[in-house]
Figure 1 (tube, rainbow, N blue to C red):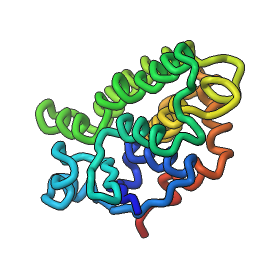
Figure 2 (spheres, helix red, strand yellow):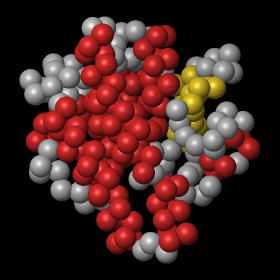
Figure 3 (cartoon, rainbow, N blue to C red):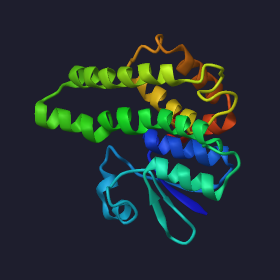
Figure 4 (cartoon, rainbow, N blue to C red):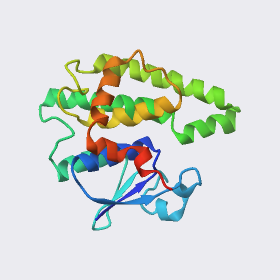
Length: 210
């Protein structure tokens, strides 16, 4: 069975949980306590040189890291349903939407960066929240324009990699009290996705440790 090195509130790990559920792939969750620093310990570093989550360990012991790379592998290994459309233009557009979150928004707002703002620059909770909102709002504004428009999902009538990346980002945006009113297409896609069992089962509240 596949093993997912996971943290319940990691948006990157959340993406992988959604994808595994969409494809109906069984896995064992290995809980990594990020707040307790478990990500930097040998057990996690043995499968993830960066000391991060998620990591997906295959049956033969091969370890895959970086959420988007893991999603790509899942699409190759378990092609139904596809996370990336087959049409080359649609595929490129879905990737672009996903990368707004994965490459532009999330890296500036993850636990490591927020911790560094506090440690090096003395940022308090309000300053960190302001930093978070600035970058998230820039990314979401662009993503709102990039949405397909036909709905209900970002690329049209079925969820794809765009939605797999969007839903965890909006979950975190709400944690930081980001006003989502300016992004009706994103909110609609989020509602549509979260009506699906695969997304519901991946929600942090469903996998939160007791």
